[in-house]
Amino acid sequence: MKTFQFATVLGAMGLLCGFLCAQVQSQVLVSPEKPPANQETQARQPATAIFAGGCFWCVETDFEKAPGVVDVVSGYSGGRRRAPNYENYASNGHREVVLVTYDDSKITYAGLVEWLIKHIDPTNGRGQFNDRGGQYAPAVYYATDTEKADAERVIRAIEQMKVFRGRLSVDVIPRAEFWPAEEYHQDYHHKNTIKYNFFRLASGRDAFVNSHWGSRAGFLELPGARPEGALNATDTVADVKATESAEPRPWQSFRKPSPLELKQTLSAIQFKVSQEDGTEPAFRNEFWDNKEAGLYVDIISGEPLFSSSAKFKSGTGWPSFVTPISPDAVEYRLDRTLFSVRTEVRSKYGDSHLGHVFDDGPVERGGKRYCMNSAALRFIPKDKMESEGYADYLKFVE
Image (cartoon, rainbow, N blue to C red; front, side, top):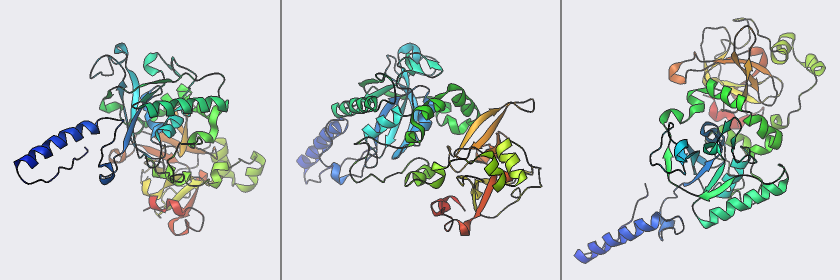
């Protein structure tokens, strides 16, 4: 809530004047075109924007990784009915949208538009990936003429990049009232990680984004994406993303050696596990009972995967963690071997088989158990992290 400053004036006329001034000021505050006169003296308030890009579970997750984003809420907007819900929003003309709260000293509205387009299929105006219908159509909502012009400029600039054939099909429309979705939709990727990962993988969203943008999807390239003086600002919902965005890391440009080369550098069990999707013996591996503080990284690429702070004693005989060091530190695939369907966990840059994730972890810590193979990991003790180039990750290690 924004606070209002009342003038202190002696006498009844002064009090009345103060009241009237407060009323006028409150009217000014709700206008997106005209900021209050005393804005400079108030604490900076985060800005907000509304975007549509298909399933709001996925759009929420993607915007949480954007620099300068403070919060993301899934919801509905643009339709006829007030207070819609998941059962009736589509029939009343609403779209699935997200309300993005952001620090406009670190990212601009134009930067958010660029981020949206890089994480959707902007050529499909009739839905997104497996989700069809107007309720899933991509859209940018503007509150001011300046925002409208910025959105149209970004769309034209991306069209000129020739990343896609033809014109983009992203609606640029006036901002309408935002209605938050039901609580079970909020942070769905955290509450139902495995189901969400299945859904996202099957949708083809990530495959599409990677095929068109690759690593560029994680960076802002267009002029005006960041305010003046904020070119190096990288604060995000995920602190690790901020750490990695500050400057390129060796693992981000890692090129995987050939199997023959890897056999010369890895032990037999390391190669079998990481490259042939094998499993090491329980209780007879290097890190299952390791209690030392430090960082677990990929055996071949060195990319950070897990912090000792997330490790717990599962009793399974393999190193177990409640969460990766960041939501996008690992990738997931369906594993249909052994007459069952499991969720395989792989490293993002090294493409190493790490293990599997299950829903039987500590409930009080999220309920996940990332069951990893020691042979796919390298452990860096806390006191050696700085000398090995991982100083920025010390804040994640207790």
